[in-house]
Image (tube, rainbow, N blue to C red; front, side, top):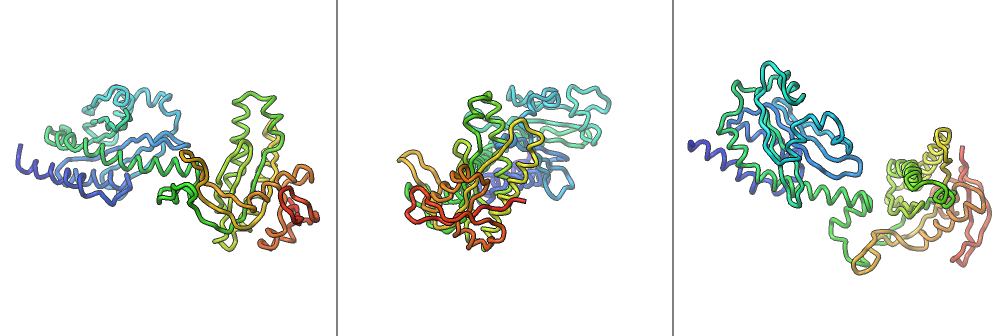
Length: 388
């Protein structure tokens, strides 16, 4: 083995060991890795990195590097991919299931065992190798390399790649777990709360006081639905209902803090001057979407919404070992009471007078007078949002 090989090997190992402390992007790390292999003399024409990311919407991601491209291409992989014929008839399944390295010299004339080899041949590649990328706790990922060099990879090229893979595995696992932590927190507590938790807001009682527009939603006839429908049907309808509400809330800058049974709590912080207007747009869009969906469903999705504005305490509340990052305060309580009042007043959206003033939306509402709200000494002026 030549001194040049050792120098190339050490340069990549040194970079993987100490040169990536500030780099969090797996896509950029993978692109740099491929570029460094090329700089070290590996005749690399194509490479892919397949990672299971456990995102709520997809199973994993596929990162593709190809010679001549300025950036990697990132594709999401659906949860049902492993049940497809494409996956079953691929080297990926073999590597994932067995942990073995799969190598295939691409023949000028087929047939090949797996269809992907035909694709590689048609694109001019001559050799292909797929390695398992094993992380802790038995989690296995996949990395592949291809060349278009006549004769394929030589022994030194393969050895150079193989000797760096343990460090590649370590580097990718660290970034993947950081990404997983962020994804899980965003999924279960929302983007704003997740950033605060990742920044260290994990002490019980820690939090801030902020002014926010608050909305509380509740699905109508949920008790009857739960009693008469199968469990899977109930869950499906609940998810459809939450999609109708959640998508416009997130679109207009709100943050969903909690799903409780068939209820939803969301806030629009008033650090944005148009937060109240955005909340109303979200509510209207959700109601319109529900009305448009009625024709296609055997269960009519209807929900009540209570809206208020005021100061809320935003932070960690709970027991010593189980915390909830949420909002509490009179403003939240009043929004909840207004939502309950929608049933007796038979209006889909009820708004407090304070919110009407803050939003300047008097012309969009109908005053329903002053009402005694349970838990509040003073009467509350209640308005109904006019729906088109």
